[in-house]
Length: 454
Ligand code: UD1
Ligand code: CA
Image 1: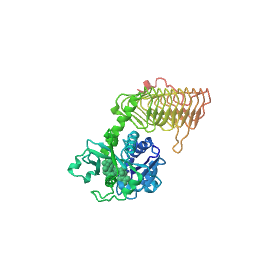
Image 2: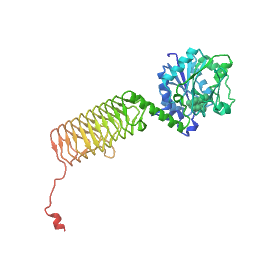
Image 3: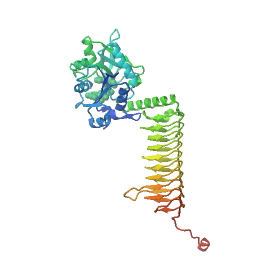
C-alpha cells in the first residue's frame, strides 16, 4: 500500500469534552486517541501521514513529533475546510488519500487496509467507511438510493426524523482520489445547520458529477466509534482494555479477572505469566514469561524479566531481571535496576539504585542513590541517608556485605566487599572490605535500677 497518503483531522476543540486539553490528546487504553489513529495508519502501510492541527496546535504538534507532517488549520470551519489545509502538502500526489479523524481510537490497521482495498477494487473516486450503530446519535447518516448506492451523508443536526432513524452512519473515514477530492472540496458550501464546510458533502458532489462513489461497511461498529464526550471516552477505554486482555490471553497469558486488569495498548507480556486482579501494566512496560504479577500492582514503563513475582507493588521507570521477587507493599522508583534474583520484601522503597545479583532487602528499608553489589543482606529497617537538605549523595556497597538491622548509611559512604555493619550503627566513614564496623553507643546496664526507683 505504498502509495497511500493519509490526512488525519485533529484541529477541533472537542467542545463536548469540556476540557482545556485538545480532544485528540485525551487518552484511551493509556494512549492519546490521535496516537491510536497514527498507529493504525502506519499499520495499514501509509507512506505519508499529514495531521491537521488547530485548537491547541502546539501541544498536538509536540505529541505528533516526527511521526507525521503537520499542517495548521487556523480557524475550525469544518471537516471539509480542514482537509483543504493539506492541499499544499499534497500538490505532488495524484493517488489515493485516506482521510481519518483523530477521535477514533479503536481503529485498526486491518480495517483501514480493507477500506483501501475495497476503494481500489471498486475503482471509485470516493469510498466511505460506514458502520451500523446501535445508537447513531450525533453521527452523519448514510442515505442510500432505492438501488442501495450511497446518495448522500446527512449530519445529525441537519437530518429529518426519518433520516435520524437510519442506523448506518459515516465513520468519518474515507478514501478519495486526490484530484477529485480537491475539485469537489472547492464546491462545498457552509449552508447547513452548523455553518461549517462538511467533508461528507464531497460524496454527493462527486455523485452529481456522475463519478463512482462507494461505501464499505465495517463488520464491527466498535472499531469506528468516534469519541466526542467523556462518557464515550470511557466506553472506548473499556473496549480497548478488553481487546488487549483478549489478545494477551490468546497468546498464553493468564488474566484471572480481565474486568479488573488494565493493560495499555503497547505493553507486551510473555506466556505463562499470571496476572492477579487489580493490576495495571502501563506505557512502555514489557513483561517476560512465567511471572506472577499482582494482586494490586502497578507497573509503568517497567522492563520485567521472566519468573518475576510481585504483589502489592508500584514500580515505575525501572528494570528488574529474571527471578526478582517483590512485595508486599513495595515502591520501586525511577532509574532503578534490580539484577536477577533480587528479593525486595515488605515496606521497602528503592530509588535511582543498582542492586546486584541475589541481594536481599527483606523489610522496611529506604535505598536511594545506591550502587549495591550482589549477595548483600540489608538488615530490617536499614536506610541510606542520601540527602543533606541540599544535595543527594551516593552509597556504594560491595558484594556480599552484611548490614545489620536499623543501620543508617550516611552518604557519600562506601561499605567494602564482605564487610559487616553492626546492627543499629550510623555509618559515616568508609568500611574497608571484610571489616566489621560498630558505630553505636556501648550498652551500659545499671544494676537494680528499677527496684530502687519504686
Ligand atoms: C463527523 C462527520 C460525521 C461522522 C462523524 C464520525 C462531518 C461534517 N461530520 O462528525 O458525518 O459521522 O464525524 O465520527 O465531517 N476537525 C478539524 N477541523 C474542523 C472540524 C473538525 O480538524 O474544523 C476534526 C476534529 O478534530 C475531529 C474530526 O475532525 O478529529 C471530526 O470532527 P467532529 O467535530 O468530531 O465531527 P463529528 O460531529 O463527530
Ligand atoms: Ca467526532
